[in-house]
Length: 399
Image (spheres, one colour):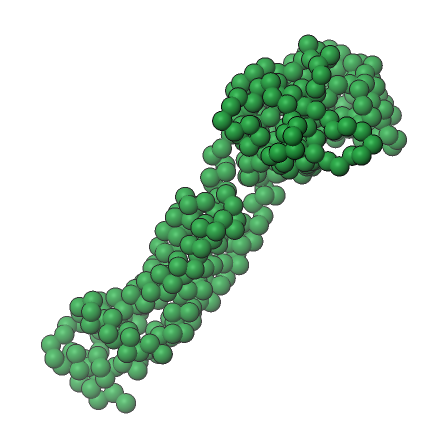
């Protein structure tokens, strides 16, 4: 039976070509959306590396540049810790779940393993405020004040890239930016964390470092305050917090955001491309479905004499119905096979890197094939039913 169906499809190859192209196009569209959604789901399962339920961020906004003054940071910290709701206070360049991003080039002291690394400068209390735990080593502290290299915490991904096959704790690397006027900044790894993704659950894992920010050292200030509050602190605490901040520095304005709200906004923003792709894909699939249905209807109408001959030779209505559906599914299989031959080049060549790994590829291919087979089945049901209900006499006398 299969061999017979393949012969029928081959003999009508010119007529089926456009139909196959429509199916191939539909498969590619579904695959793109499925791959994007599968990768997002895969990323969502990975830890971000920090807590967000009881953490709040406070962005400092000032009309003039703020100096990096140790006394200023100390007064802010003491004033905020006086609030009974506040457990920890830390300072950082920017908060997690913000669109801010800072990158630089770093390498080994001999210039090897040069990498582009994301960075976030943080004070000593940042890790306790974010409920983080080191996988290796220890957090930097005042004990590192006289160190010969700036202490830094790096994620496992960066540790494996810079120091493959050995422990990264205690190792030294340097800033690889071209600065002819001064020697490159040296960093010594104090601790390693398994994960750190500043943009949250949908951020692709990247090489990340958390260098130490020391209030009063350097020119650039930390413009974000990170707070760890007591569990169950209500959102109404924002008013009390803002009042205290105004008491401490009334000349500044403040943007107070619970990290849970920042997370919600970031996830919604990151889902916008998937939503747009899904809407476009749904619209195109509807168009493909109408085209597929129309072509199947026309093909079935042109084959009415052939169907009548089969009925006259003893084929029942069920056999005709199954033949129409089976031919369409076989045609879809051919188009899917061609599409997979083209798409498999993407993970093989690594064009999209980890975004299209083999797990994402296999899951997306299976999901896309299921959607196409379902679409083909639905579009062939009525033409097949219409062909099956023709009597031999009607079919043989059809013009």
